[in-house]
Image (tube, rainbow, N blue to C red; front, side, top):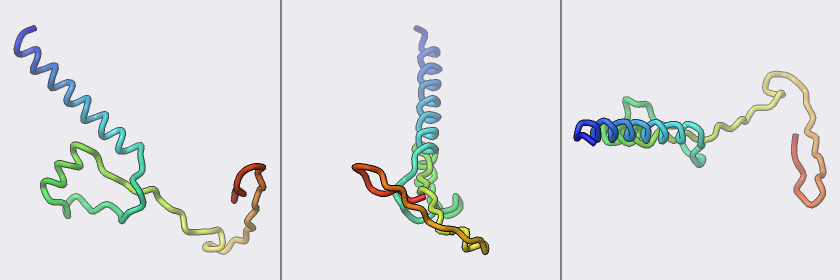
Length: 88
């Protein structure tokens, strides 16, 4: 293998590794935390970390109910054998 080919191969592998890490970060939620800061608020080393590892985003929580927009609703609980009740 020529030295130039090895450099190209390593570059392709590095880019694929970065793409995999970004995809992994985008498909996993971080533990509940504060919203991520804006890019402008990050230090340069934090920007590099986000570039390499992806941005940690907390799972969104819906705190609203239909009552918030003037609609009525009821909470139904379904008993499941050998398990906790599931709220829908």
